[in-house]
Image (tube, rainbow over all chains, first blue to last red):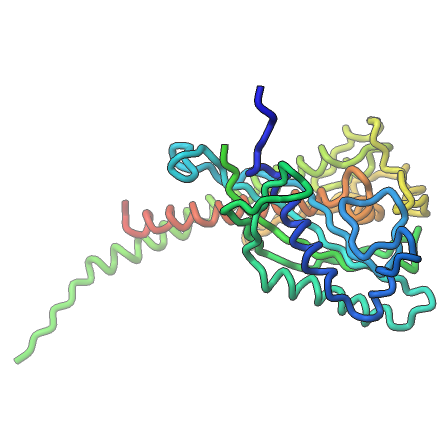
Length: 179
Length: 162
């Protein structure tokens, strides 16, 4: 049996979106965020994926995928004349975290982080898909995932972490899953 | 001499079709809206982590039959991100006033939600439930958008008297 390979699946889309954010969001950080990239800080990271179990150090971004569902089937089950396929949509959450502890600038910093996310996602509505069969050398597929309906949603103060300030941004994306 | 002859027959027919379509559209939209809202209510009830069952029972239409059930997933905090708090300690109290389900057929509006104070925290922080209310809302939104396209086609057919 051949090795399982499904480059059009949800896993590919999630990984491609994560790669896009990793390659673009945290490559040109403002000075007040750049300290976390210092190796001596240890585990501190500016970008975390899928709710890490390890404590993280703000300021940082968090990316999580909340699920996906079928949007529509193509007529005759033909997505592109050859393959069967469905149009699917998913929901991605991008969080911005800062600490207000001894930090009078936290509101401005949080606002800047929110703007960084919005600018990146609004400027790039079509994001390239990559085949991650070999995770270390992903190969670009001739396909894209589109984003839309990017919005900030309300957050609740976390009674367990009162100094942790957060912004939540939700992004809908859709792509064609071919079989 | 110039004569203008206006035949109001087609216009009258168009107005009649428009009125019929408008009246029918309200009923169709309301039925579809209720279906989408109910589906969203059920999806959230099913996904909600259950310990005392208050959060599941208290979302949308009040469902006391969900109280007292227990699963392996707890709505008590599980990680460093959701420490025990005064909110979770109140989980024992459940009543119909927890639930929010308001229908306004005239305005074609249904409001659903909950007054259980820790549900927003579950949606933001619970390891298994995180974002599931957002995802259910997104599904409902996508269904409504699809419904809008179908209704537009239906309305156009009605309007042309087909």
